[in-house]
Image (cartoon, rainbow, N blue to C red; front, side, top):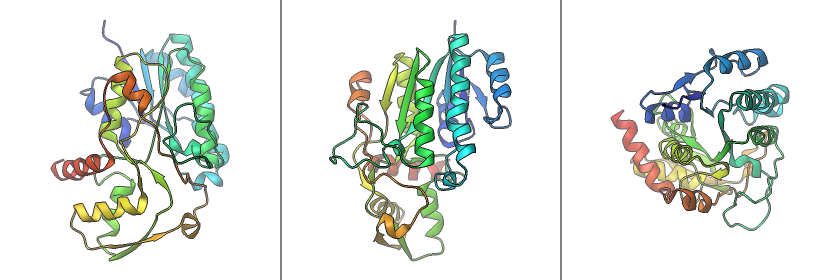
Length: 284
């Protein structure tokens, strides 16, 4: 008997890519189907579907805005996940919860890739809410929590760092970009494929899934312009100079060892992923 897979946030970057890789063979849920601030709606919709696997991609992701909207951020990223987890336990549904490297937004340890055992250190509202979401998801016995980083995908219609840089390059010859945050921005196509590998293997627990190696946002921006042959000077600035409302991780490179040992697969490097994305967006 074929498993039923449901995906929340199915119109977002990661959700739409999961749907595409599943050949549309999944129940696609968007905000108008199930409002995450409505506990009754969550219970009603998920009880009707009774999926075998639920991949929960939907989230409140306005990191800076969250500092002034803590209530709605925690409602969507934590309380709603607790409700979802409750329904998953009721119907024996496997819950796949998508989380973030931002749970390390105040990490100050050695600059070596962070493992699933590295203690989370969330300081910002968004980061705290996502860690609470992880904790809620972990109450489902067959849970899978996937932390990822800096997702981009879906082409020009989507909002992400790559598309923002390309859009700004149309009108600006010089940009100031942060150069003291080390992480691994990741292509949704690769992350979605990795998630489906873990689901197929019935993996449980916490996994870090990003592209390989690390980069700063300034280095990433420079590479985007180099690969697309745009003449834009990228001036490096510090996180303090940028002055965002919410804290950002100074170092959030995630170790892929557990994923690779579990699946036998290696994640492509961030540079390889970026090259493929830039080519894919031209062909889509």
